[in-house]
Length: 191
Figure 1 (tube, one colour):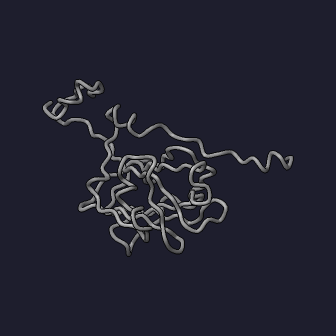
Figure 2 (cartoon, one colour):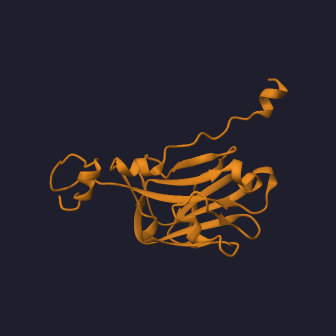
């Protein structure tokens, strides 16, 4: 392998915009049902910026690694996927390069389900499936995202957005087709 090929490592490909997945009716964003906390943050760069649906704002940590995002639900919740927006071109050494995802009932029994996930110069949405060994969505009270390393050995980190998705279950009343158009989605709770 030539030195040029080794220097140009493949980049993490961006995933689809999570809003498109929501419009299909297959998943629903449930981050608003959780209590969010961070290991540290600079003033004005905290949870509000991480959850504001604005890709120009971000959480910025302010402490030693690992940097943690804690997502706690009031009841055991089915979670299918995490989506993280990262932008290497804008954030450079603040961009996470290695993360870990842990789940459990509380801080004392978290277990890693996605270990040492490598992100190479990410630019866009990164989709992280949260599945058990049988490929079913996990059920958990808590999710913890740990930033273990940044690009260029950066100290603090930037994360622009995090979304948490649950699968939408079929109706038990009957097998109705999913409402996918905007007009039908306005009235889907009436069905």
